Image (cartoon, each protein chain N blue to C red):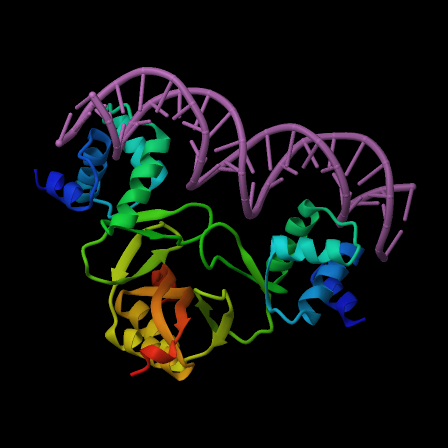
Length: 139
Length: 139
DNA sequence: ATGCCTGCAAAGCTTTTGCAGATGC
DNA sequence: GCATCTGCAAAAGCTTTGCAGGCAT
């Protein structure tokens, strides 16, 4: 029941929708879920939770730092549990798979670029759009 | 009247809305415009062009490679003339200003990362969110 | 002339909001 | 018990689409 603590620590009352949604992120095989994904999963589990609540809860989770919101493409947001370890993403344009990666050199270069422009780097968003290499195309 | 050629080359009939919109991108002091920006500018110029047309034209321009679509934050797309020179963006979170930059090292590192994951890098999106350094905060 | 364009209005999608009832503490 | 939370439905914001008329070639 650690999720109850997490919610309380975030200043959120422990309610069924919040618990269910938090548990979903902590147990799902997919780390990256859209609001619709979450909603559909809840329905599938037989929970009676409205879409509006899903959006509200996800927004609250984001504000509380429990979750990170991504805007990979346009259209809709994607959420992911914030485990404190920053990383960037690769998105496969064929399968939609999301792969996480970290590259310290890139992180450092971003800092340098900001510095060179005399501004402070607050955040960044890096997404690589990739495609599986077809055997026939291998060099 | 070079714009007429550009449109024709893109396989688009030369029409007033297309001309006006293309000219706006080529002459505006701002390189990055949203559909709404474009629409409002047209209204201000006394043009009688509908929003739907703005969206259609921008989408056609994107397909024709005349323009690049960005999804900086969520909500709405931002368009920019495609001059063939790839670059990434810094967005000031206070003023909304957009600064372009190029960093070959980062470009190279992205290629390496993709390669290391055995996928082909098709495209990428890098946005740095920055803030002006306040004098009082300077180290 | 004919086929591509446009404006208008209506609809589509994701997300937000108002409100009355329900629930956590 | 009281404040917070939820579900529903309605609305908002950006974008797309259907259709009938208009324009480029």
